[in-house]
Length: 130
Image 1 (cartoon, rainbow, N blue to C red):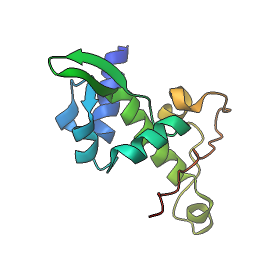
Image 2 (spheres, rainbow, N blue to C red; image 1 turned 180 degrees about the vertical axis):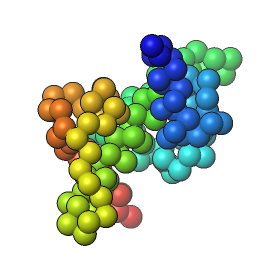
Image 3 (cartoon, rainbow, N blue to C red; image 1 turned 90 degrees about the vertical axis):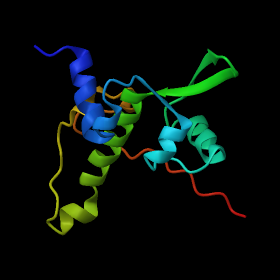
């Protein structure tokens, strides 16, 4: 039987890449490198809306540093992939089939209150107007 750490590492390797194996926390710069965020203001809006995992403040030599759990970020990416695969456009065109049970969807802390096999898209935050 696999331990939870092995399952988390497999999820991180699949959705974030092998570079992040063994890493438990990601900094903002790493989120940028992964292409998940491009500015801190949007990230704050997404966290406030519940569309992105909340950061964790840890003390450091230069004050408090904001980090995110790598497994939560990997789960978020897995959830978005599962939602994309369930999109009605892909099913109508025959390019995709519904995923009835995806481990990231069923076990994700971001899917609280959802029923098994049914995925509801996380609300998207519109880009700020200039």
